[in-house]
Image 1 (cartoon, rainbow, N blue to C red):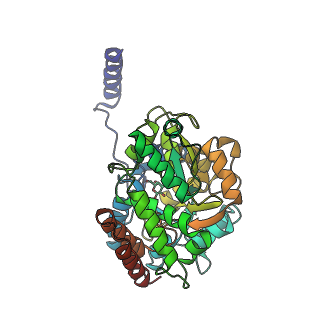
Image 2 (image 1 turned 30 degrees about the horizontal axis):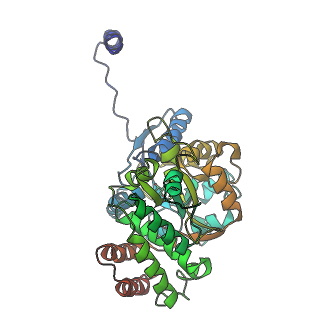
Image 3 (image 1 turned 180 degrees about the horizontal axis):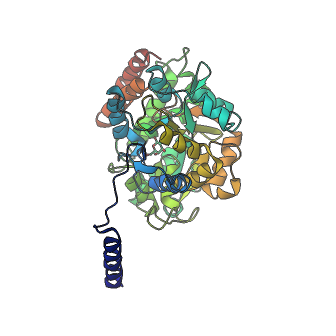
Length: 423
Ligand code: GAL
């Protein structure tokens, strides 16, 4: 079969060559055609959503060539570092993914983004998105990005068979129940809690902080009334230490950690709902697993009724080499069709309020319901509540804690990080 295809390809090449008189080479797209889209969605699961939106973009814009400038690495730590240096050198991509909230505000105040009010007017976008979300991407009435989704950070993913074998009945709803379940799983010889690189520990940290403090106190941490030195924060950090002690060997990224759960090696992982795309998608982009049988989910312990949110949004950098091309991409990202192509595969729900809800099944249907009812809290690791400097300082503090789990030291570092945040 393969040989036959090769022969057909060779014949076609001869045909093209004889028609044009030269070998058929795809010409490099010109600067006016290239649309460089910067993200970090290269990995299994993640890349599927981007591919679906790219396909739509290419169909609607035959004059433009999509150039995937994604940089590998979950949560974009590497991508964001490279982006910062590109922006610093005034060499922006045509458009990049920036999280709604404090992260985006940083780009705005640094003067790196063009306001998009004209696009919001043209496409009547002001009513398409929830007003609280538009607030997170605006400064002084100017709107600076197009949110493509809502992701949820506080999800406890688990393997139902491992829980059953360990005598754990149902997902733990509180932190004490979680610790009890982790201990029971450890006694069976399975990994209690799968973990990846440092950022996944910060991801776990934000869920534990929310679960231990409660929504009101957690939300206060990002305001002028914050008290990082409180006994409640100390208790949350003690909970975090106990949970961290139950993690398995760190995996290279969030996908291999999630795979340990799907493959029956680990009972739990706390990860954003991009994990759903990875568990569920098939055949090449994910594991093709079945909801509720191979994997199951619940709000991370102590956070029921609260949605720890983040939102991926696309921007128009000042000085984008192909401004027209970037706007064409933003139009697709803003559209109902674009969001409904992207999100079911990405594992997120649409930022638009008029999306076709029948496309969102299993976990996504559950999550749409939660989004409509829950209280809100913002993610730390994924750019909502803390600006980039503050997030980096929290990351450093947690990184040190992984090697030396000294609660008092971590609290001191967090107090200092808040004080120096300039936020
Ligand atoms: C987040 C991003 C998500 C997902 C995740 C894991 O920061 O918002 O879309 O990509 O990282 O890579």
